[in-house]
Length: 199
Image (tube, rainbow, N blue to C red; front, side, top):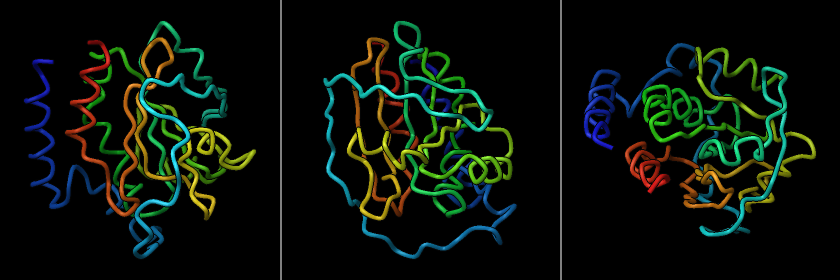
């Protein structure tokens, strides 16, 4: 992955320009963002680990398409980004930040799937405020949080953890990171782990 250092420099430059890490997209609609206050860092117990087959799922996207994990078998590595809730500060900055590294996903034959337990209308309205996100946004609303629960990242309040799960082309989990819900996962770490998927 020769281009990763250049992308890390770009991420750093964006941080300086915006004055906050990676992006400040939520500035454009900050009056609509709900302040959750400080939350318990993590509130779940993982049900899977690296080396396990990933739980299979099919979820509706905000485009109306049904996306199944199995459709990427043998074709693409899959990175799942679980976020707790729409219209909250950290989530509203996290997903737009992935627009900076779309080409790294493509180089590593990977697709990013954004998953939240919010319903489709809520996710549609929220992500439209962010601008164009290049990856599918999926609703784990009903049965409520079933996919998050199958991985062990459903919190006791019914929201998902802030978690990144990487699955290789054979359907095996290669990496799991559950972040402090109050902080966005480090983009640099995601890039480093992404580069290992094809090794």
